Amino acid sequence: MYEVLIPRVLEAFARPDEAEQDFLRRVQASDVRLQQQYRTQRRVGSEIYADPMIRAAYLLRYLGHYTLQLGDVLTGLDGNPEAAAVLSQPHLQATALCGGPGPELIALAALHAQLGGSSLALSVLDHNARHWADCWPIAQAIANTYPRHPAVSIQGLATELLAPAVSPWERELLQQTQVMTAMNCLNELVGHGRARLETALRQRLDALPAGALVLASDQAFYGACEAGIQLLHALLVERGARILLADITKAQCHSVANRFQVPGRIAWIYGAEQNNRFRVHVQQLRLAARMP
Ligand SMILES: C[S@@+](CC[C@H](N)C(=O)[O-])C[C@H]1O[C@@H](n2cnc3c(N)ncnc32)[C@H](O)[C@@H]1O
Image (tube, rainbow, N blue to C red):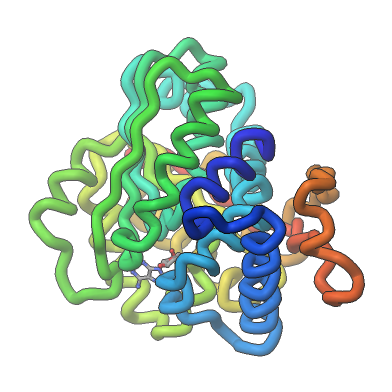
């Protein structure tokens, strides 16, 4: 993945004529800033993603890990005929709540390509959509190269999930959605209050068509993520959805070793002298369900 990711990040975010080392030094400073925020704040406000260098740092550090994170949800569904029935449809329309740069696209494309799918379209609903838009061609280039999916596309719409009402265009999109994901956003969303999140999730679930797949994953480390995924689980059960996978407590979380060898070209960014080793929490909460 990094063979595509690194040059594409350079192309999208480096200044014209900026030397690679100079650019990567700026990425390093942004990466340190992002890590400091993650370490010191109870929740990271998503305003930080408006900064292009933070997005570049996020892509290099997290895109691979988060692709595998959704991949682990899909692997957990291996052999499940109900999930396969949805994921093997030739034309798949997916919607990523809080999809950011869209690692969801790459993970879904890998499985959809394996299942013989012919086209996959992902819509990212995110209040930072206009910022993350410069990352989507990168996610698409990776999905075209590694899974070799024949036709993937990604688009995004700026959405405030906690707004009191779902807009008509978002409702229309959700009504055509076969797979809805929510990954790595519950910490922030729960921070705005359980009642607001409950309304937001309820509205989205109620807009989905019968048979749609709902996939969620988040970091087991944060109590808010656990509370958020349990809330989603309860709403799914209330609606009569069939629960296909539910690792929704810290005790049950899915643990995996770090599976990326960071390439030498960028490894120095994460050097010990920066107290900034290249790793992410790999203890995940996972939830998958099919709407009745
Ligand atoms: C940590 S990123 C995760 C992105 C992606 N799902 C991933 O795993 O890489 C969290 C995303 O949630 C979005 N977000 C947070 N609160 C939101 C809200 N209330 N409405 C819409 N998007 C929100 C942020 O803009 C950010 O892109």
